[in-house]
Amino acid sequence: MPSTVVVAMLVASSVISYTSHQGFRRPVAVPSAPVTAQIAAPEPITSAQPTHSQNQLPGNIASDTASGPKVIVVGDPTRRSQDPRTAHLPEPDLLEQSPQGPLPVIAPDGRRPLDAYARPWSGARGARVAIVIGGLGLSQTGSQNAIRILPPEVTLAFSPEGNSLGRWMQAGRQEGHEILLQIPLEPFDYPRVNPGRNTLTVNANPATTIENLHKTMGRITNYTGVMNYMGARFTSEIAAMTPLMQEITRRGLLYLDDGTSARSQADAIASQQGTPYAAGDLMIDATQERGSILKKLDELERIARAKGTAIATGSAFDVTVEAVTSWANEAKARGIEIVPISALVRDPQKG
Image (cartoon, rainbow, N blue to C red; front, side, top):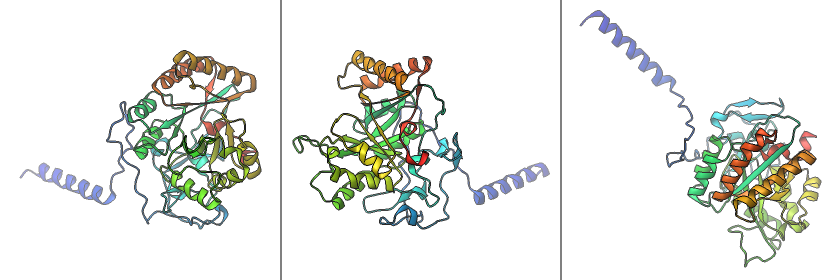
């Protein structure tokens, strides 16, 4: 055998031996449109990952040394966000194992899910608009369409009643979206109008309220906060809302009130409990017609120019997704910045 062939074989053998010991880090694939079933399900949470006691307060959480996905500094040096390449993976030190599933928790270093999973934005002082589109997961084609078409600055809110939520959460995060989780709360005409499984009701004791909240929260990971789904009666009752807001605060999340109920006590309770809080200014698609939605979005822009910020909520209907996408692209050209909902919360930790 020629000596050059022998040398080549020895080099190849050495390379194979080295890589088999060192291992490869496979690059995170960003799904291209359309999103298909090859999107990986969230990695199962195993006993090897750090856990926190469900009854521990954030200040008493035991320290651990495991490291999660890389954390980078973006904009505000005190606010550390995930590397976009791993934004679809939950950070182990922000998770707590529970019978209800993986729950968000404040990390031993004080970092909150609100901080880690927030989408970065410019920090500029111009007119800013946050748009939150809910109902993700309820329709497979609707979820795929919303994730594929909506600008990444638009916040997505996931319904706990949806299917394949882990898949759609990962797809949304890989496309750059910040996400929220919708919490079913009791409306005035409950149970004739039923928000879904594990609805939080005004007559439940606090322990049951928290248990049902955890059942909903355990459906997905990587969300910055929660928002109400229905709930006009629940949000009007201080005794019912207070345990909910306390738990949201304890877990380092934000609360978004969709702004549809004038009786809501969420703002006052959030102030009392130190909860990062925001409220919607208007719902854009109560009438599911493109012209009507565009008029609502123009109204949103007027609010933002008048007071600096504005928040809109809507649902992942095809007509809403198309109208929001078209309007957002034009609004950017007019100097309106579309920001994630985390950019507009009243956050006691930020002063």
